[in-house]
Length: 394
Ligand code: PLP
Image 1 (tube, rainbow, N blue to C red):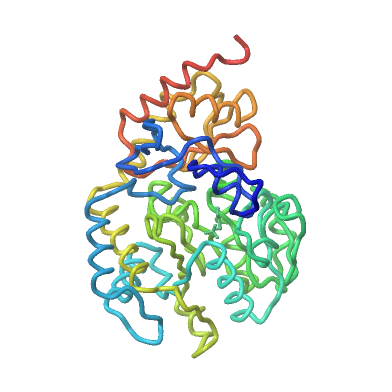
Image 2: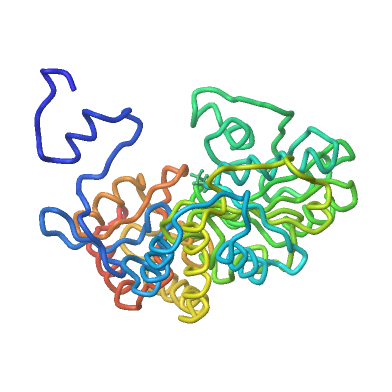
């Protein structure tokens, strides 16, 4: 630290002094959290409807989650994929059980972008083709290949790396899909509900058309469920809402409920294209991550959280079109609340009332990515806070 930098006990100041300045940070410092509540270092209690970018599916300090994770820490913190582990086998089996039945192989990684990188690599290797189609407004991560398939990559990263040929199908435009999907395409990648774009749910017709067209042309269909998956949309994976089985599905974020991890699921047929050494990672599928995955899946099932997500969506749609909110899009607890003014103003006005929401790449949409354990009183709290914000046309 240079001499002229402020010496402060405030983590906001210390991080600003010590870290690469790439995050616009919110004006509070969490110290601990329980359920859906974050307690700050200055005594505030903030209702977290953003869940750490859709990660905290089980909320915070869930006793069973903590027990499974800490037990694993005490037993075996790490071993790589060079050895087989009971906890990794459990995580793989449980994950296969909750995905469409056509997907019965797993490759563990560490994050969403890494899951997508591997999915693309797998699609190119399995198909022997190099052209990828993505969907306009999609977001897939920040590594080079993931950036290449992210809509408007230049805007996000200042450059557009394209390690392979990439083109974009206009979202929900079946005619555009028909024109673009041909025998040169290795894969089409899509988010069933576009998260960063503000909880925009692609239509069933469009998703089914992608499935039909990719099959007809020998291309693979990749569902990026990094944000929409693990129960967030009311089913374990959002493709189930549309009764569509992709060839490859990527998962991360809520998968470990807060412990970093990711997974690529694929069909037996796709998996059969690979042999020893074709893919690899040091940390992916480590015992701690595997235990976290087991905890997430078990708790979602035991506490019937998928049902809770569906009920929560109904209640939010009923109660929260009020104040600055004109319309709601999305599924389950991946919702985009369309505002009558810049979303950032609504986000800030809610934060002043101790409710945390997120913005999105759509300047008028705030995102709800609440823990799946959300309760009806939290929804009432949100509705009340929104009512306190005067609509613009009043
Ligand atoms: N895919 C989707 C749909 C995402 O929303 C994100 C992150 O927001 C990613 C991929 C990248 O995940 P990660 O930040 O874990 O690399």
